[in-house]
Image (cartoon, rainbow, N blue to C red):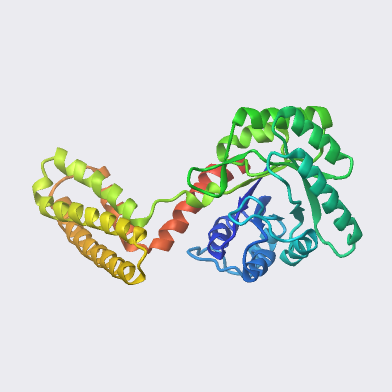
Length: 368
């Protein structure tokens, strides 16, 4: 089972390169849509070459990149379930797939509507066959439906004309979002995939938008070839959250061991600044006037600078406490962790956390 990581920004490619390059021989997938910038099309096409490699020290030449390039499978879809939907015809869509250098390109499907999807599939097949010699990708059809039987009927019709068929329509919108980001019902998902496997015995099956590490074993057991994953990029805490979390752990230890008086003043100031930052950021996001918005943002930056100064002061106090007292190893370890987070910039922290998440939750399954 191949996980496909969805990426539509250069920063996402940079994050992924840092973990992919660590395991260059592992077969992995990369997926995007065609409503990205032309510059991104080129980055995606050439990946892993030309993409920067940030915060990674163990590569000395292009050998690993060349190995990795042979391990990556690339897919693009039409972006039909994004904010704008797909606004181009099949000729233009397929030209974009060609320019992006993908191995697979997904047809334009219609959510929950098997009849409309089948009509779209007919157009896709006609255009693809007409220009087959110039297209360098494999065309993926998509089965849609509102019920198990509709999915099976749709899949059966598509199977007559297509070698590669994905299962779509299994995502739902998050509240207050235009994007489809969550699987509606795991049991329904598995039932559809199992029945399609039993009845049609396909050699290739793709579950659109359904990958998550918690589903990996079950999807693999069913015999799914691949599935894409949008949520990987959000598995991190920002620097302020990390520092606040570690700071609270230290406060709790100090309070239970009689050292809180040494840091009480600094902790009070930090707490007040935290509240000011949250309140001002809330006003900044809601403000419509550009001039007022700039002023609020400047105030946020000022408060954050003051917060950094207070964190630096309280850390010095804590180091003195640790030097003068025989404190448990855990306290010193958390103190070092705070310093590590404090010294790293925001982007470095984000890259590290997301890469650690992917390694611990996805590659741990691929390397079994």
